[in-house]
Length: 423
Image (cartoon, rainbow, N blue to C red; front, top):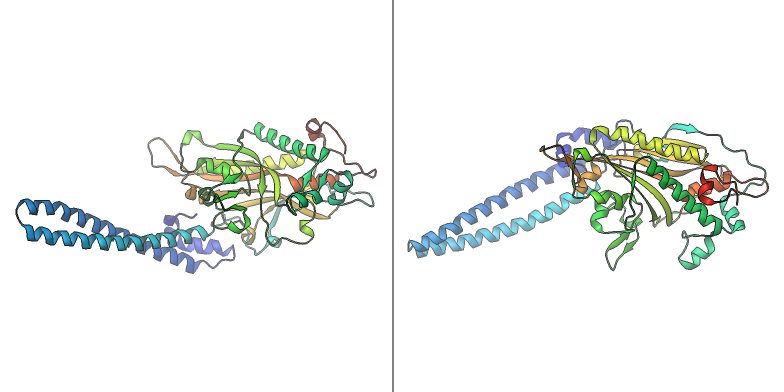
């Protein structure tokens, strides 16, 4: 959430920045400014009436003591009228505050200056590319055919148990999945990330804190009886560890990683892009999260990008990095880099990671601050990245490493985790 002070002091910059998102924010920004003026005016009037009521209440006792009964009774009526007026103003102020907060929740983060303008993923900017695309044998198959033949991922049974998008991993498929999780966690540990195992359900405050609510409410699974949500990513519970926290500057950076299943409704998804492991409602992911000093956040973003690079390199998958354009940028992000690996059997790039800097957008919602000595607390910057999401990594590994005999060759870096070198 953008800070009100920032909007007031940088009105034209905010409007111009949001144009990169193809959003004409002039009316929205002006509404926020007008509501802020109305809000402040109402607060001042409420405070004025409260002070006036308190003053008259104190005077009533003195009037009774002095025997001025009529004046005291008149003052009592005036106090009651003042309280009624104050109550009406407070109810109006509550409505203004709710409308004001709702507007702030829906205005996106201002993109970083390096974010390219654009309307869709077709306008994203390729900034890095590495690895050779394998030249597969004739008759190479997509992963959904291979896993069915090998009986290592069972989509049909998942449909029976739950529904489409909830696969069952079996035998060596389950062990490969677990190997990837352990590999990613061990690499995060080496990089100084402290592991946490967070809850898989969050409350509304946590969803609001990291920006999933109210923006993505329809994309999240909602447990209505308890008013809880299944997490779409470990970013949400891990970052919320620091909600309503004031850190000492010396404690920064805070580095955490976590493995969790993730749950996304993916409403409206259809077509070839959702086949097999390409798009699931439940999938596994290792997430890295940092809370940092504002002066360091873009250096940290580069470090996190390098961390993900090394993971993909060690898996020996061809990959590229895209800087997302304004039209493809998430609501909360100031700058995002997407990682894509190449699936030779599908002849397409598959997104496997997003690494983002949110600057103060999340921390303002979270009231996540840090303090240097006795100075006034200030908002920290938050960042997160997938390191990595498993389904499409697994799909690319299966497809790119198939040989003419129909075997899948396991990357060397995973063999100590799997206990086997082929499927």
